[in-house]
Length: 304
Image (cartoon, rainbow, N blue to C red; front, side, top):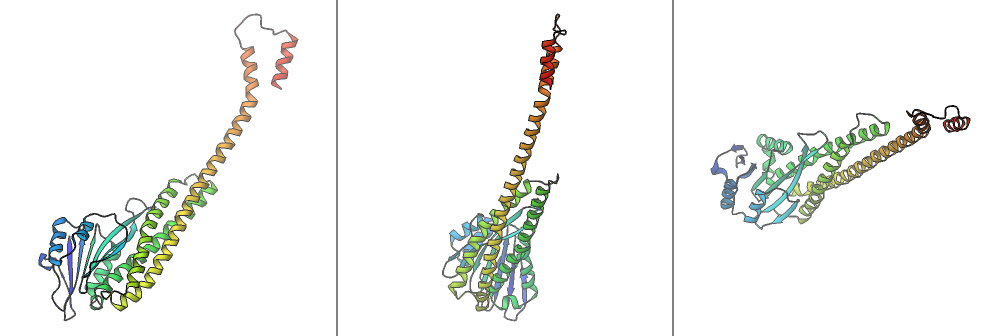
């Protein structure tokens, strides 16, 4: 599925889903093409019409790359990442990969599934001519900013969940699920793997002073890179805290097992002599020494 947003010389945003719009914009027009779950045929059409590098197109067909920046002279190719809550678990986070081709008058974004923050900027650009009037790089920056801002409450949320779980484990609440710490740790590690390259990519993009970046967008990229740095540090702290919570749970379980073994040992020490006495005197044989003072005294001493 694809959609096309143009800003013509009259300053009017216009949307289209026609195949003919999958082409370089005419003079005086800024064009943003957005592809969701792209197919090979659509990407090949873009490659031919925009003369895009086959390697970059091949990357768009396979998701799983780290964030990076490639310069193809006529355009920049970026791989960036965004995060949303997992639809299957409140304790997990989904990672989204977005590929972007940035030229002087065109922006092509490709992603494997919808990203709410990205869609909000698209809607804003369709309603506000100033977004594309400031250049397609400004639209790309706003999308990046929205995706990073949407990540902050996600990190805060899993951090709060982790604190609640740790408190529940320490207080011995029966409903405390140690698997939650594992899910949070797994999400934090996945985010850290994506945020570190994204941080470096934004720094490189800002320091290049690339002419395809509007000055306004370039200035704001520095602040956005700083936000990603703080997010990366926060996610690293969450990952470390999740590991500590797992260790705390295991230590408490080991302590409980030790207490249980101690109680069982005491129980055995008390009832083992009684079992010997009952076993001896309960034998179904004749001539047991019931009247023998020695054996009776011995059993009495054993039981005491």
